[in-house]
Length: 301
Length: 281
Image 1 (cartoon, rainbow over the protein chains, first blue to last red):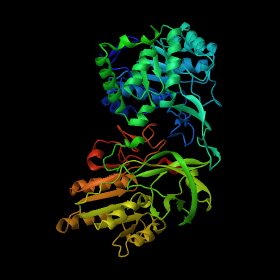
Image 2 (image 1 turned 45 degrees about the vertical axis):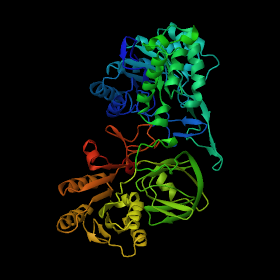
Image 3 (image 1 turned 90 degrees about the horizontal axis):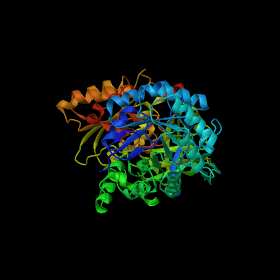
Image 4 (image 1 turned 135 degrees about the horizontal axis):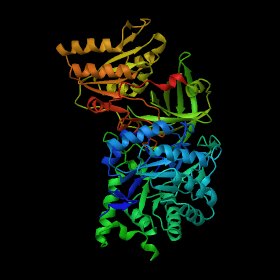
């Protein structure tokens, strides 16, 4: 009922752990699998190891969840070992998220990470928290296409491109990555934001600026996925604020084929995957659907 | 997590967790010696023995700490000098601002039917069991405290312990014999465990300290068939189960711990191999 085949890969369900949440240690993937995750995206991987920003890197209040982790990761060599290990101990499809400082680095990363045989490669061209060091390739159609091109040319594994909502119009960017050969699109990354502590009179995040995620960005995600679905014919991993089964159904209706879940893990713990799946099934049963694919994009009809 | 969906049965619903730093004034800074400092913050805190908070030092960093003492409208945490953060604590002045969020993590199990308990604390690990010691004493349990450090300078909680309990039956030890017995905590524990076989047996042993010490404590408890709970430490980013930084095998120290019992530790094969990297900062 909720299983599907996307990019020629079998997913037990549509819920994919979004990049940046817990995708660091292979052994923890077992815990995620036990909790009915449909796919696991790793934390974004760079060529060299990165420490990321100093704490505070995350917080939450009524206004939403903020983070600026700064793409901390163990680097490509250790990440290859981690994914190889993960492939041995879990059956859940693994999406390797990569990011580089220029076109050549993305090509190199795609080539190297393919050795670990992840099921999908996600090129993160949309992190809002490393602007001092990295160009935001997702901000314009030409850069986005150039990255897509080089990643595709360096791997036979399906490639999805993660886009940013922090642009004037996401449609031409989506179109250009499709034309450059992307197999899919992940949307959206976090929204650029900032918070200030009024007693300390300074930004709370060490990076000053961060990415906003969670329930509050759900309408933004729905709008972007809806527009991307109208623009391209490749599958979309709809990500941003999904917390309940009803959110999931809404995101499918907007046009997503798979559903990224991130901050919901903060709200409810890893058991949230089981909960959302059960709620999706319940909704489908009550509304006469037997295959989750039938819901994708119905809001466009 | 928030909305009180904390995955631990021991945490009562009246504890509310806040996940954005709340800034408050430093009301006292006690430099015990060149390596240890206690900072008192203004305000109320509701926290259970075993839990921790994330302390934000604006412009410096944010780190996890346990609470060592709670008084009227103030509470303290104690740190050992390790890296830039703990060094900065020594420069704090009364009136400076620190932020904190939490409380996070699970708690030590305090079974009301339990009579005889033992706490084994090594060095700064005592900071993680101060509230536990106080509560067990308040609950009129028979508490045997074994508290050791490398040398007398490390036994900074000695006065606090004597404050909690006037007729303290605590056993102090140091590696170099500069205070208390010249012994390791684990040696005193083994002595107590073997003595308790003929006397009243410990119902549970709680421990916090260097991981190599805790590993030995767990082994001794297994040998003498006594239940054991340890408080683990890992580098921590978020404190609420999202960043994955504090994972130990298939568990997270911040939300599945920091307190783990002997049964859980059997599945965590990395337990005992951890050396705090902060020492190399």
